[in-house]
Length: 320
Picture: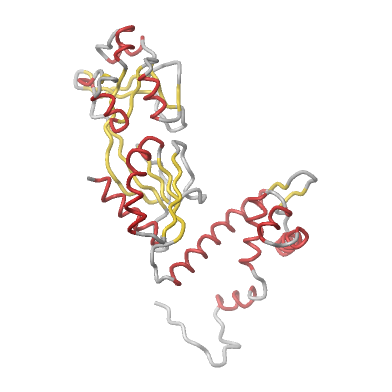
């Protein structure tokens, strides 16, 4: 481990890191980064100035100074709007990452790692509403200094780009530098309403689905084939239908309305199955169709304490 000491006469004993720090000490980089980030978010110098309590000309001079130092154009100005160049996008991503890390570092030092600050959580519409949101009352009581910022969406948020701190995801995970922690599992079931089955008949084998309206997800990672076990062999059947949707709740509602047959997580339709509003079909061909549920986040030693305590909390609650 490196040891740092205070020098009485440091003029010629500076490390390369200290020399770099000395070179930039005269420039308030954090302030410039913050101003640039706000300009990009607001889309104009005047709007950014109102938020920052600066004049539009002062904001513009700051951007000019950054561009002059870097020797590249970051923003393209027009009478209507601002737009980022390729270099501007790179600088904005770096600025946002640096500012978030600086905020986390100051919070951790000021509070000795106490869990506090904004925690951005992304969860799916149905699972989030049924299982995650009900847990937030307890979590908020345990950690009153954490500001919970939750978004329910079945869209795939970009954690690496700073769109969320933690995302709760279903199914196989793509290879990435993110860290994943398994929370629980969700069995899938194929269902239809009694009305639909009365009108169109109940499929007796997976192949019978080819004559039915099968409802499916429309997001990019969705699978247009449904898995089955036929004569001891694991097979996939390409399904087709007239409606696709971006959430399990929507597909469940369509199935309840008798529009078609849907393959959904049991957690979202269990009540409807018990009440007889939806009927599971082809269960003898179900191959153990299960989605694993993970919390996905940026791990490592610099992970904020608020993120760590939430993942521990949600893992303990959902695993049971």
